[in-house]
Image (cartoon, rainbow over all chains, first blue to last red; front, side, top):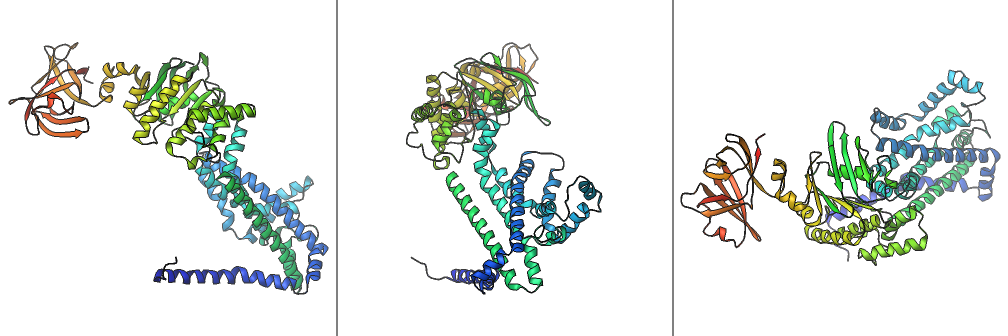
Length: 274
Length: 342
């Protein structure tokens, strides 16, 4: 039975309405607008726009760099979280602060810092080039830039879960004869796995969207270092809002699919280990 | 498997947790480590298990030094204070863990798990997760898990600390029976005197990182080796006095003391059940309060010129006849322990 509306629940209705309206305005309407715009000239046009070689290469570049940095973050982020929760050492607090720093730095600034550091005129960049490794204006620097802007995501997802774990479970496993590896796989991983996956996801979504630092560091050479967001920006600039919307729609769809997929994975994992 | 510990030391930073402790437990014994919390009991237990590394000293299990052996190779069953069950595994998987990491064949493992569950009265709970069990059930799962791989040694850290008093007593008796059925040597850590004295073959009292005294429960109770022991076990009254002609005066109460020269300053420790109170018009003490504690009565009095004293009597004791708050009493000390005053 539903209780009669009290002033409080009338407030809650109002609040609910306001939140939903805000969400509509911010999230749903723009997405719908994008979908309509991208598909306005029909599916064949949409298909042509996203399979156009430059667009295809741009999306592919964005996808593999985002996937790579997600993997790197999953491993290094977890290791970092492990280090700051499990060990007490000089500089631990400083390290914990440094991890969040990238969030406070505008991405354009990130790009400039990296170019200054790795550009061909810099000693470090020159040294790398001397060894045949091209960092600036090539894919390595794209991955570095993505790594910088997504640095805290995995660490901050995994850290609280690790801090919350009962160390005695690991001791129990050891006393029952488990090696370190078995203890990690069977005791620790089931607890932190969803968080590691969640951090990788956040990284992936953020990396797919990154523009500010990439546009500065990558050189934006079509088919080579032109990422999807930068390609879309180019299309908009040259007046092809249709093509831009089509590729943008493809990017958004991919991103949503990945998000959905890993949300399901996490839920599945949680249910299995509840 | 017997346990021999020699000169064990452990510091945490500046804090000395364990200070030169040597102890031994014979094969098949159920021993208790008793003492106030923070006294180092758990640390000693963890060092025996290899969960903590000793700064110095040695641990021998079954005649072999194990100091450099990892926990997983010591064949020790450990029951943790808060159970430490694997929360994402079912009861069955928890109990079978020690067998599956040792690569015991599947059918043998299943048989052993079922045997343990039956022994622990947990049949029917195989598929439950730890958070779907009561405290007592979790405790039994923890025990089943520790015992499944047939350890030579069972170590229990405050095994009944997290369950309520009634269940605690029951689990205690049940642990004693279980220990007697299995061929295992056990040590459990507790701060509960009754638990230690009623269950264990041997009690080792640990305080401030040192072994104060160890022995059979009766010996610990009746022959405290130090002032600390005399005060620690049971409830005790403490008075300072000086010996004259084999007697120490507490107010006007004469307490016989042996083994001290005339004029030596002594500290007297008198347990609350080593006293007799009787009504006496010009007695040296006055009764203040009488507390009825179920089957016992606690009487608070004060000795003129010496301070408060309390005693405990059975509820229907003839010693209580005529005694009420405000009356004057005489006191007879049936047993006092005297120690040189520090």
